[in-house]
Amino acid sequence: MTDPDVDPAPDGGVAFAERAIHLAGPDALVVADLHVGRDEASAVSLPLGERADLRDRLGALLDRFDPATVVVAGDAIHTFDRVTDRSRETLNALRDACEANGAALELVAGNHDAALANAWDGPIRDELVLGAERDRDTEGTRVGDDATDGDPGAHRTVVCHGHEAPATAADRYVIGHVHPTIEIEGDRRPCFLRGDGTYRDADLLVLPAFTRLAPGVTVNDATTAGLDSPLLSDAAALAPVVYDPDREESLRFPPLGRFRELL
Image (cartoon, rainbow, N blue to C red; front, side, top):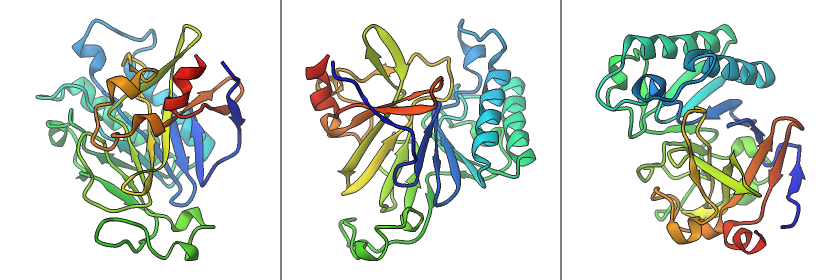
């Protein structure tokens, strides 16, 4: 297949990182699908332990971006019906890491988070709005774009989990839920999916799972198999982005509708 485009610089106020993005305008680091407690609920495990792995990787992102806010876009916990003491301690350790770096930790509810309120004493939001207010018509279509096109900080971003349609109109939606991965020459990697104007005339960013214990959903055949989110009705228009941590670069691939033809 053809080589991907290398894009080391932030694009439209978005900087890609390993299983995370940083939004420059609102100065927010966004991750999705921590699934804290997955190691307790299954036979899989990490050599250093789930808590150390999540905390260390989040800490590296905090050091790199020094964000004002850290947002978890749903599925902070794994089990639906309860939160164990061990999982609660992991969540507290992640919040302590954020606060030690001067960042507020915001949790957005996912479909796994039914019991999250039993372990979290802060707000749990259905969706989180970042950035400036933007005028939209009753159908959610952007109006008055000329005033803010050159300023990514003036765009309204809604972070939600992606298992349900969001209630708020935005210029960009950031979701998780799908756990996208991509297979290239037999190597499977977590990936982002991005679509320009693909949902309600707004841009869309799908994040890979931040946990390394989730196997992920391969998106190579997503144009025929579909993706489990009401925001992803046009999978063929979504372009994969793979972050290479060794080179600290994001590698862009063609939209999935063309990508399959290149394999």
